[in-house]
Image (cartoon, rainbow over all chains, first blue to last red; front, side, top):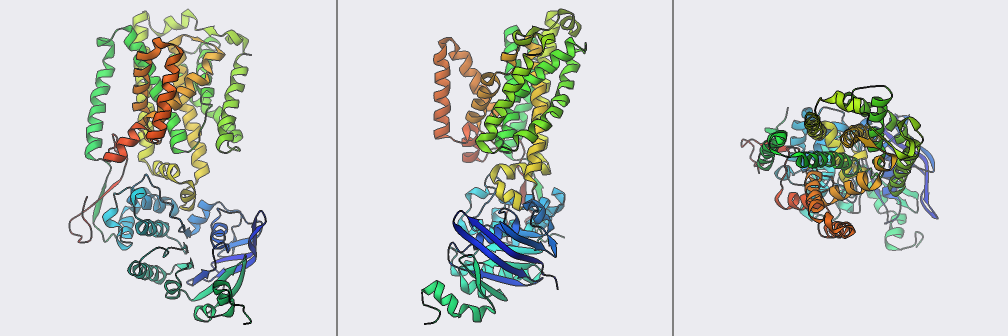
Length: 242
Length: 345
């Protein structure tokens, strides 16, 4: 089976800092993959390269078997590759509703009026319906994160890349979010989720990859990977052979 | 089908008041030849030209993020195209205005191909360089007076209207109509699907790209459309002046510095901004111009104060505080009361 999204032998360096060192990572259709790693491990850059906002120095990006390494970000989005940003990037002068409408109309390539209904429903399921006419720039952190997710979903993705959507949320808020992501997944969307809130991640993902120093140092069953000596080493400073 | 029952509206209470006020003002302005003297008409026509130029620059810089300091290239190009069409080809001056727009848009395509290779401040300087090149080229056209410029031949002026008064009325109405057309086109654009994308680009280019919006393509289209409009306004400005020279046609002060001042103090990235800005600019100019160069110093000080205290301009300040919009641009989701989770606000 051809993976829905694959990074092949991807490398990227910013000056002397290597953020991706010949990484191979594949996502199967319908799968939910978790990515953890310390700050600066290169997780967000990986999403940048997958979605086209960062050009890799080497390697290829494949979407459904097609080489999309040189494809512009907007084209990748229209193919079905959507992303939420770690630091929310709302269209701050537009209303919450307009934020979602523009992503729905362009990301899914539909007329504006055709997406109104879908967008209203999406705001409802993401808990933003009461703030539909508020300026996105005035939202709280939780609502900005919800908007990131709603806007990504509005493009009707086949692959959803989530970048730390649970960070900074309360336990209850986090639980709501996990339920929402599970629903999205049940709808057939494949997911890659970068997250520091490990328990939220483990509630959703089938596979976990650990990124450190630009390399995948461990991947596999989440419950096994999280207890692996490599993870203990990078997070707690305990030597792998201790 | 949608589970949340809803409708989507553009108009708000403030925009209904705004549209009504604009309609009344337009009627009064259209009747100006019957209540105003010659000086008033000339001044108003100049105001309209600046409203149009500033609105176009606002579309370019405020929405598409293309901070050009070289729009005088297209003002001058429009003016020179008009003079060339009238003098060399014998085209009627009014027709020439409408020919100048599309021709300038065509010329804008290779200019965009060149300047779009530059980013940010480099783009700004690049556009200025292009304008200087245009100015130098214009001074080489001997049939249009070379470096010293040329006046519109009397025959062509008389062909417009038999009397001076009729001609002045005609130019006044043309200026008003052109500005209304430019503003209406901008409003129509911003209300459309592409206007939504353009507003998204204004707010966040990275997120716009990642939401499926072809940012580069939209920027090119806006650049060309703005060149189209700017050149038509330029053609009209020099038809009113009846004389053109490279230095006046490609003046960075008149057609870019003042236009930026107007847009910034009025409110960049908002359609109302340039209109408010032009009114303030002309009030200042009419009251302070006797002070000579001190007037320019005061203008600079006003610009600095506004940028520090109200970086989004005067209209930006009002719009954020009161949520006003003078024109119905936003889409408001209005929920029907059948749904328990939502409530129209």
